[in-house]
Length: 143
Figure 1: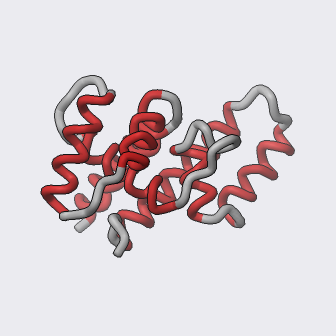
Figure 2: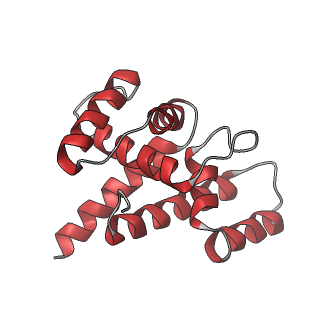
């Protein structure tokens, strides 16, 4: 069983794609044509696991992680962002993991905790999860 439900996963995928396309559009290292080609790949060809690694795993070039680890990290980050803490670091990640476990009963592994901390402190994880939260709010307001 996955940590994320179908709607949450769809929101996460859209958020990761948006985040990557924004990074590509703002990149000064790419020509407009290269950025467009990369964005096309992100939107049409990249797998879920590739999107997770590129957006949430700052070490993806040397340490590729499986989707279940990064999906868990995303869920932990989401929960950590809802703790009310101003800084999302180790303590917020731990608190988020505890809240996630209590709410869902899911198993939290050390690799998920490490990935969540890396995503928050070294990667684009907080941008992706922030956009997920905004999309979730917008979706709930439409209902």
